[in-house]
Amino acid sequence: MSLIELKNVYKIYNEGQENQVNALDGVSLTIDRGEFVAVIGASGSGKSTMMNILGCLDIPSRGAYLLDGQPVGEKSQKELSELRSRRISFIFQGYNLIPSLRVWENVALPMTYQHIPLQERRERALEALRAVEIAAKAENKPGQLSGGQQQRVAIARAMATRSPILMADEPTGALDSQTGRQVLELMRELNAQGTTVILITHDNSIAAQADRTVRVMDGHIVHDSLRDGILVPAEARSEVRAS
Amino acid sequence: MNALRMALDSITEKKGRSFLTMLGIIIGVTAVLVLVAMVTGYNSDMTAYYEKLGVNKVTVKLTWYDSSRSTDLTTPLYEYGNGELAQMVDGVTPDLSTQLPIQYGGKTVDDTVVYLGSDQYSICSNYILESGRDILPQDIENRSMVCVLGSYAADDLFPYTDPIGKTVTIGGFPFLVVGTYYQKDGGVEDSMDHMAVVPYTVNRTLLRSDRVDSVTVKVNSSKNVEGVISRLELWLADRIDSSVGEYSLADGNSAMAESNDEMTSLSVVLGGIASIALLVGGIGIMNIMLVTVTERTREIGIKKSIGAPRREIVGQFLMEAGILSSLGGLVGIVLGFGLSLVLGKAMYGLIVLPGVGISLGAFAFSLAIGVIFGIYPAVKASSLQPVDALRAD
Image 1 (cartoon, rainbow over the protein chains, first blue to last red):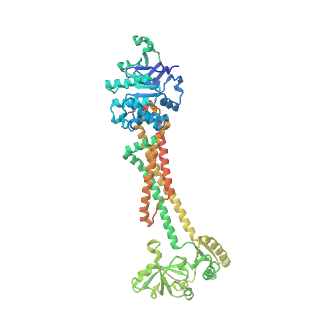
Image 2: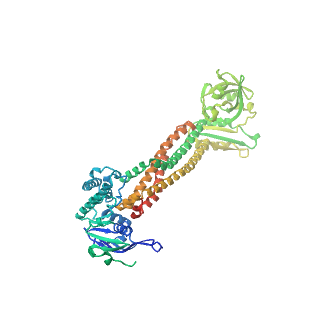
């Protein structure tokens, strides 16, 4: 059983209207535990839609999404937030920290939803902050930190929850290249410890850091390095299906 | 605990806005408390007025169809009250008065209320003798031309001299002043002291009539009022032939009770009107909470993406609405107490405070309003799809 399985998934906006957009147009994909996958594509290719669906932030219009073999489409709101709480953590391009909370509280917040006691939350948050070398700023507000520091806080938040899946949406997009490399390094470390990492990016050089690259274009997967090999032209083996 | 702190943070972060939001609730709660307190104050003012007039009074009214066959029941009633009913009755006096000028020397006090009473008039109407003597039984018997002055009349006619032993002119007839009463300080502009009492038997001279149609029986305790009324009922039925006349009995306390009842329903109406202000305050809270939800859509998205369940989001917004409204309620209660104190002193000269019950009620009502009007924004916030919420700026 694969960790993640998309079966012929569509995400259609304004269905039946003139301005209908098929953001995902029949996508099938499997990801196993422990993989480091980069989803690469230009803006508007559907890669972010894909991440939203994989991260249970959005629901497919059609098709099935199995997480741990369980169909996500059949889950209630409550079960979905439970899934987001225990199975998946996110790193966003815009960091998405809560400005009114202190750094360590931001890191500890997801654990609140897992009903972990305060003492343990704090310890685990500080531990994660030490791992990303930003423990000194634990009592600061996110606004007082640089972009790279904020992204490391976001990574710490993802680490502290110990979710098996990490989704990163352009995590280095707002960072300079050196800071970006550090962030990627941290993600590699997490992957080495067993976390499945899905990295969404438009940047080929960043995608190259991953073990596997999946290229998305116009809502289709046009190339998957696992299946197609690295040298095979993506278009030749694409999984294009008529919508 | 986390939700509480976040709610407090968000309230203190925008102090001006939070205050304006609370203002509706503050005004509502203050209005409810002050209005109800003022009605209560008016009530105690009225009660004090009735108490000065004298409580526990039963008025016997007599109507004669044929005056030639009427009998004088004043003396028998007086004797009955002071004899058989003495255990329950403090005094009996005719309920007879007229307005006449009183003159002494060159001075005149116009429109003085002259009561034609028995020797028990002062007991029945709560007057206390200050100097000299009161009306005596022999004054009644002898139709003595004597009077006891109320403090207003006494002070006005005799600013520098002792009125006792002086002769004043009431309605053109000379009366010897035998005593004065202490100030009672009641009614409009001391009207209760603007008076004089003379023996009721001088009514032939003063009123050119010897009819007494109304007699007041002062009962010693409110518990005995019922008993006295039923005894009088029997006593009167024995003495008045229904072909000659009829009688009626009025419980003076019932007028007070009636006025109390009226005031209670008035306070319910006024409180109800004031609580409309509370309702409007609640709508203000809903409005501002909707704005807050819009402003914090992104924060909601972040929280949802890291696993916050719906009730967490609902809880946060409800908590904020609840804190805003209950804080407004508390401020309103403080203002309501202050304003009641000031207004009560100014209007009634009494210390008037809103009751504990109404204060707790107003607080609970404002909290409930905050929570009720917070539900819609909170549910709206929590039902956002995380991806849509994250997309917001």
